[in-house]
Structure formats: C-alpha cells, structure tokens
Image (cartoon, rainbow, N blue to C red; front, side, top):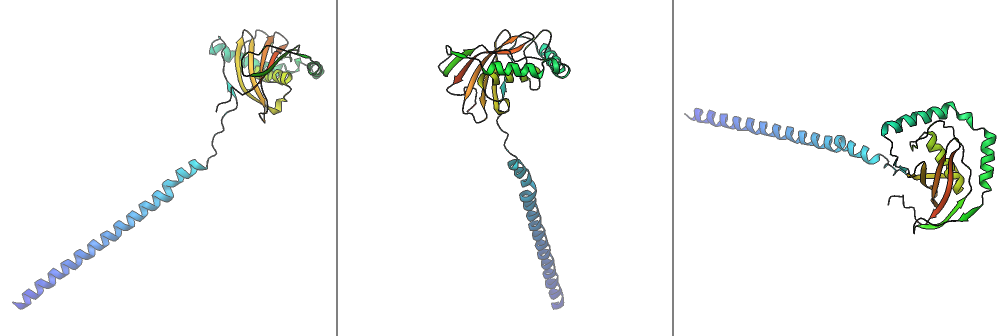
Length: 223
C-alpha cells in the first residue's frame, strides 16, 4: 500500500516536472520570438524611414510657367513639335554676325522712364530694343515648354532687356500679356534684382522687349 502511494506521488511529481519544463520551453521560445520581431521592426522596418529621411528634399522649382493662350492643348503640342523641328533644322537662319550686330545694338539702347504697372515697381523704363531673332517660321503660337524655341528666345530677349546673362538667370514666371505678347518675371541667380519684362512677337524677327520694370519684391516667388 505504501509502495502504491509512493509511486503515485512519484508520478505526480514527474508530471509536474514535465509540465514545468514544457512551460519553461514555451516561455523561452516566446521570448526569443519577441526579440526577433523587435529586431526585425527596429532594424528591418526602420530602413524605410531611414531611406526616406536620407533623401534630399525636393527643391522648390524656381520656374513657375503658365500658359494662358486660348489655343487648345493639341494646337500647343503641335506648335511645340514645330518649334523643336525649327530649332534643329533652321538653327542657321540667324548667323553669328547677325546675332552680334543685334547684341551690340541692344547694348547701346537708350532707355526712358515709363509708367509703372503697379505699386510693386521700383522703376520702369522703355527702350528701342531690337527683336532678338528667331529660328521659327510660319504661323506663330506662343509656347512656354522647356526646350522649345519660344522658351529659349524669350529668355534671350529677357537677358537683352535686363542685362542679366542667360547663364545667371532664374525664370520665375511667364504669362500671356495679350495677343502675341508675353510678360516674363526673371532675376539673377543671387536674386539681388528681379525684373518684369514685357515682350512682343515680331513675325520673322522674334521676341522684342518693349518695357522693363524693376520690382521691389519678387511677387512670383512662393514664400
């Protein structure tokens, strides 16, 4: 009888020992799993945040271009293609000598005070600038897209009128100033001076500056 009690106690003890061992193993496995998950979350999932923050912030574009022409998008696209073809196929239509003559004449232009268009103008003046020349032929529709003949020639005309070199110029804004007219807002790269340039298209001769306003504040620069 005593032997049976003794065996029963031994069996119970053995069961408790096995149960305790199993619980211990499960706890260890659970702890390991938690550590693995935490490590994955910290070192694995954290890489996305790291990659995101390591990227340089996108610089705010200095070129804010709008197209107010009444032409349809299809007309604008077609004209863009024509301008690009004209740039490639007819780049020799204006010779270097003609460009130098135009540049020299424009540098000697005498300016006269003009009426400012708003209260943000420090000074305004007009001058008898010559058109800067063009590679474009046929009917003209103004476009502002990067890489087009219009865009390059507008920049050149703005440079002539303001005295800012093309490679030192920020083009802030182009807008429709009327039929075959454009108003450009440009500054030097250091942004020490900002100008509003009024330009008119002359068929076969290109863009001609007609008036320049030196602005008190760059009203096309987003804060």
